[in-house]
Length: 411
Image (tube, rainbow, N blue to C red; front, side, top):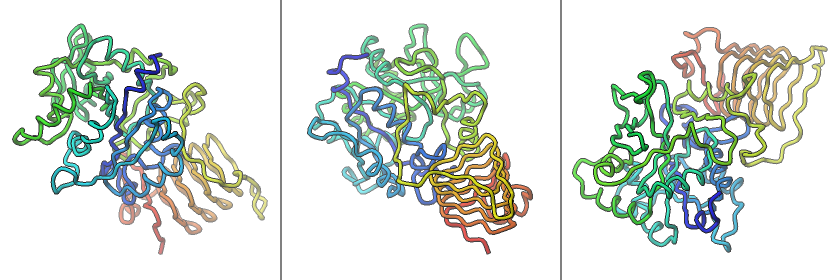
């Protein structure tokens, strides 16, 4: 563990303003990091929990796109630190401080809040994405950053080469110095010891604050810059400075190693990550006691199951069910139910994700569905069985996941 003084000299900036267009319609009313996950969490809860477990107590959350849900969640669930001790989790909405425009890229989001960096006594700045699912000890990465005397450290992970085009791909030497960084290349390079694997950036950066401020200011004068860390800042830095790779797969610090990291940027990836929680041996174990994920817990009654008036008993098999849910005489398999979900007799739900405040009436059949909040599904409705019919009303993904948007009204 790093000395407390080192972590007190560290500030985290969480980028949480992305539109998440590939997650629509789940992002119709909320930013991507505010999307619900695993029944009771929001996606951003994983990054914020990592910060707390890593002894980081100064955290700025940069918001922009449809931020009300995010601000409400931070207020209700994360107002837990003590400002008098110099601790805070503060939401920073886009304010057009430098120019008459919203954030133009990840680096521009930080640059537009550069005064907050200058005024802060932190020596190290950790830039984090608020839209990934994983556990990680940032203190272990900071320790490596200091020991390597790096100007920038980037958390990296091996992935199959055919998937690497979705990410920033890095090339490293034997000492893990990064020699090249290419954002979403069409033909990703492979790691030296395995032609089937590539090394990707996880979107987790540690900077020496003084150097970061200098680079952000210099980037403003670069013609055609996208003002983005992956496209502009990091590639330019590699040419003149010491950029180090930190291998997420090998070193986990104090957290129990599961090597799980998912970018839930698409509906299919989001669905699969939720379904991972239901596997016999979950690759991400929410019951892991040494690195609990914090969230806001509303005051709901206990969940309940019970027989219907017709005498039909419910059948639950491999279900995550949250507080306030009421299941009466229904069959539910391989599914996740958030808070205050009601399912009536004879309904059958298979391999589905149900958000909070959803009512599923008698005889409804759902298969491979995501149902957003405040939906009332009428008796006898069947979704997930006729792709053509479903596509006429809802979003249906390439793999066949049907998404019912928040507040949808059946006619």
